[in-house]
Length: 493
Image (cartoon, rainbow, N blue to C red; front, side, top):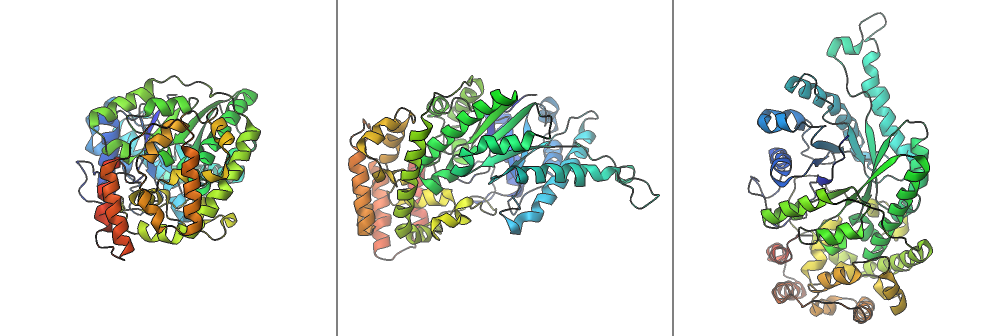
């Protein structure tokens, strides 16, 4: 089968709104049009369809075929381009658990709609993404629930001696689905091969798609921990594929800020070289809407033509030591300023009418009760006061460790050069003394690298105004200043 290379997502990290959006917060029909636009104009070959959203449309296949029949006659869903459902994880998201059932039940309905469009249509939706995966049990529950209780029920009589469900309402196809695990925490990255071994042992799978988060690990453990964690997971996936003779196609969830992946139309080659074994990259809303469309299309073409290859070898022991040091210091730095970040995050525009995925941070018991907003709002809040979150936790490292890191995090100097252009020294005046001292130590440490950047003076001016207002307790202009700074960066958060 064709494996998609570019997955368009609904992450609300964009400042600019697309031309087709009818409201500042996209929802419903806007997202139907967005899927078509991503396929037909931008060249994406996959659209994540997030069932965690309040306004999710379970009739996406039917609506796409009804509205754009000419395009989809030439580009069939499930064959040439793909809709992939992101479902809630009932183990973690108890309030959303039954949305999982609704989303899975929509898969056979989508098949019916596709068969009306074309008699021999392949399944238009046959894969789902399970967020916050931490065990094979979670994957198996989704896999077997669909197989046994949705598709499997078609063979049951409605009551003893009566016709089967399939005879009554028609077949339920496909009879099974692929479950894509989305790993979002460092422990799961370290154990990824063991989790997958347990999952595949009773299945005859020829390939696996495995999704690695890049944003939430940064929120939970710091930027460098996220980069190294992903690298460890990718190396383990390479070994797993060889050991079990199964094709593994990694997906990497990257956003535009450095903290979330530094993935923009202008940095595609850098990210491809850093994560060279990844098959599919996410193209989030800032990538799609905050850059000139011709550059967006060009960037997507580069991803689709890139030939993936194994990433360079890494020292597992060194990387795990660095992750532990930075994670602990990152949390210690975040804790005193978390309330202020939460307060400022309230003024970040939402951009999507949907429930916000809060990630594992909100559920982890190891974070001493620290609560943060979702990562996009977190980034927007930090950047908007001239405090790039990339620098949190680095003061735990020695100069020697930081320089050795360049062997495994190849874009280290490039990424920090990009982030630090948005640093505003005035933000230090708002910090508690202990945090201020840590940040100064980090900045001095970073000055030992070969960084190449000029402070963005326009951005500094906007963030200075917001800082001045916050000192006075004024918040009336907060949202407009957050948006203004976002326009200068070409991402919201």
